[in-house]
Image (cartoon, rainbow, N blue to C red):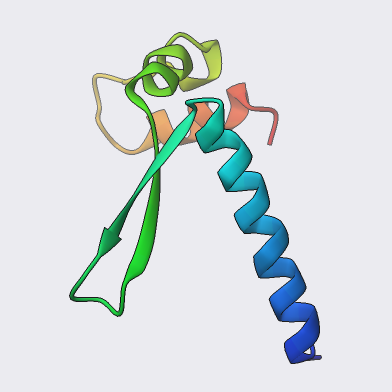
Length: 80
């Protein structure tokens, strides 16, 4: 089922408000791509990247085999 144009606009506006609030708090920033129809790209600030790197779930677990099992162990750590 496809959402109506009004519903899509409301969802987009809601997402923009959330991102604007995060930007005001210094957690995300954005750039505008002039050659991509002025598309905005949102990204985490260095503070958030550093903070997230300290989360146990974000630690990379590698194996000596390098067979992709580190992805599985990462998913297991997240409870999924």
